[in-house]
Image (cartoon, rainbow, N blue to C red; front, side, top):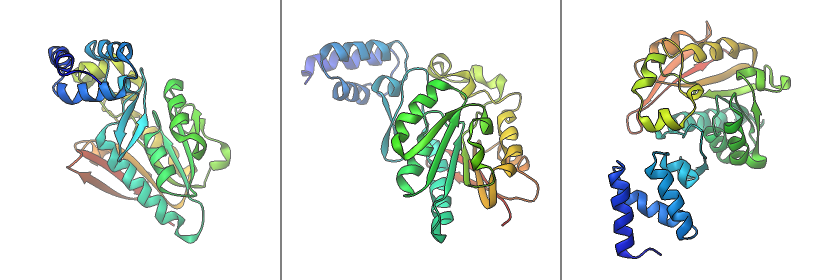
Length: 264
């Protein structure tokens, strides 16, 4: 327990470093630190600009904690729309008694896959990312409830999943290369570029993912891709020909997603 005077000093240090919600952050650091030396080490990291979530070791996501660590992309609240949508679609796919097959590509720490594994009992969950550090966290977050793979998009997946996927979900990088420099310093300095840079117009990885989807998604299955509101028409246009598309928007979390459904 930190005394009032020491807590005031901690808040002042955080505020001086530019932390807008210094009081809330101080409370979280105090709660998470096992002893005073650990609190000081965590404070130094946060004051140095490291994201609060990687300092704490977790991020709040869909009413639960998802593990994160230094050098990974921290899941944003807007991606909760992606997770909720994927859960609903996976539950619908399993209504015939089958175990739905769900895949998260560009999974990062596997936040969406972990939510699906917990909220869709019996689902066969796979997650993949090109970044081995992120995949190690995804494996921890999934535990025995799913499988995490390292590799580029579909190349990371077991061949046995071809044509069997009910729900393919991805928060592929969609920031245009020229816009990366305008992102917050915290992100640019501490999160991997591969997790945010989507190429010239932000859709390079999305296009590759959507082009490969027909080989993996079963008839009647869906792809759900996070995007921005401005980019959503182009994301929808990149979906496989003949698939029905719809754009979902949640202003509460500032989230946008495109859902593409393969004809049954």
